[in-house]
Each structure stands twice: as structure tokens, then as C-alpha cells.
Length: 269
Ligand SMILES: C[S@@+](CC[C@H](N)C(=O)[O-])C[C@H]1O[C@@H](n2cnc3c(N)ncnc32)[C@H](O)[C@@H]1O
Image 1 (cartoon, protein in one colour):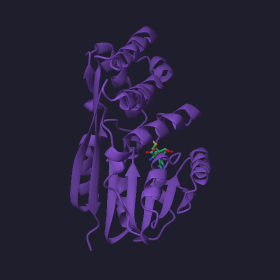
Image 2 (spheres, rainbow, N blue to C red):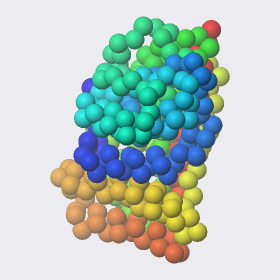
Image 3 (cartoon, rainbow, N blue to C red):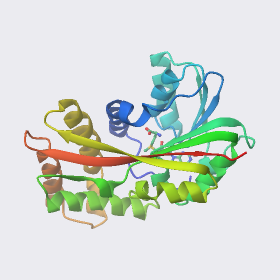
């Protein structure tokens, strides 16, 4: 495995990823449809939070969804069976050593994975080789530097920075969204376009307040409390103040903003 997965594999993390996926479906996936008969490699599928959306939105396509974690794959299989999704095969493998011949797939899809890899450009290069000439690669990543909110809070900012620091220590990059274009170009993809997907949340959007600000972003930062304290990045009280202030942005006069980045490139013929 290329890196230590900073969010861990607990049930709470699986729930967080599911909440995240539901809330963001239209924003992130509204323009992703794979034609009937096409083959798609989903690299780093986790518990299948994106897989269900992809596979149900493109019912005529066939998906090979790969992850390094057997526990996540088991959960993903359970989940797809429960949802009646039948056009997905789950395979345990490392992105850097995938058991597929070059040009095996029409499309590759990668979401919230590069941020955890020590060598994201190398991973993209390897994934690119698995696409047939003319096929596409879609990559979605966040960027924690894009989080800003009202009321402002130094404590909340410090807690977010702890997440960035821990991810860096684990070999990843929580600020990778801003690098998507150069990374995709460097991996040899052609016609790369990256579109920012801004999330804006205020009290007039209660589903987003709960699904994104509270249960996705704040839950993610809250999840690193013990690691941040153990690493000596800050004291418990200061961290808790930061989490309290992130929750404060979910009140009636609060606002929370974050930007995801979605890149699409093509393997030249
Ligand atoms: C944040 S999760 C994202 C999962 C899913 N794409 C989603 O959006 O819900 C990152 C996933 O990448 C997987 N992963 C990390 N490094 C990997 C590697 N080298 N090969 C395969 N999977 C990897 C982890 O096991 C984890 O399930």
C-alpha cells in the first residue's frame, strides 16, 4: 500500500463517506455518464460510496472497482448487493500494481484517492496506461485550503491545519485539488480540463448544513482528534474549541464554503 490511510477504516468513517457521497451526488457526478457497453475502472472505491452512484447512473456500463482494503471491499459488496447493483465487480489490489493488461478499460474513475498517495503522479501514469486510446480519466479531489466559513475562527483553522499536517506526515496531500491540472497533464493525459465544484452552505440549505458541514467536513476533522493530540500538534482543549467553532457555522447565521475539483482527461490515440 502506498500510504497509511489517514481517516482509518472504522464504521464511523464508512458512515461519513456515505453521507458525503449522498450530499454531493449531483454536484460531483451530475455530468458523469458512461455509455452502455463501456468498461470502467474505479480506482480506490473504498466502501463503494461513489460506486453505487456511478453504477446506477450508467446501468449499461460494467465497473471493475478496486481497493487495497479487504474490509472496505466487503462493505462495498454488501452495499451493492443491498442496492441491487449488479454491474460491478470488486477486486482487491494496489493501484500501483493492478492486475490488468494495458488498454483494458474505456474509462478510469478516481475519487478522493490521490490525496492519500505518496506518488499521485505515478499512480495516474499507471492508471492512464490501462485506458484504451481515446478513453477518458475522471479524477475528483478536495482541497482543505478551500475551506472558509463564518464566523471566522482561528481555532477551527488550526484544527483543519492539523488534518492537513497529519495527512502530509502520512505521505498524502490534503491540498491536492489545486494541483489536479498539472498532475493530470504530467501523467500524459491529453485535453485535460478541471472544473471547480464549490459547495456553499447556509441555513437556507438544511440538508447541506447537516450532510456536508456537520456530517462530512466537521466529522472528518473531528475524527483526527486523538491523532492530532498524540502527535503534539495542539492541546485537546484547543482542538475541541476548533470543532465547536466549526459546528458554530451550522447555526442560523453561519456559512460554510468548500471547493472540490473535477478533472477529465483523455488518453491520446
Ligand atoms: C477517502 S477513500 C475514498 C473512497 C471512495 N473513492 C469514495 O470516494 O468514497 C480512499 C480509498 O483509497 C484506498 N487506497 C489508498 N491507497 C490505495 C492504493 N495504493 N491502492 C488501492 N486503494 C488505495 C483506501 O483504502 C480508501 O478506501
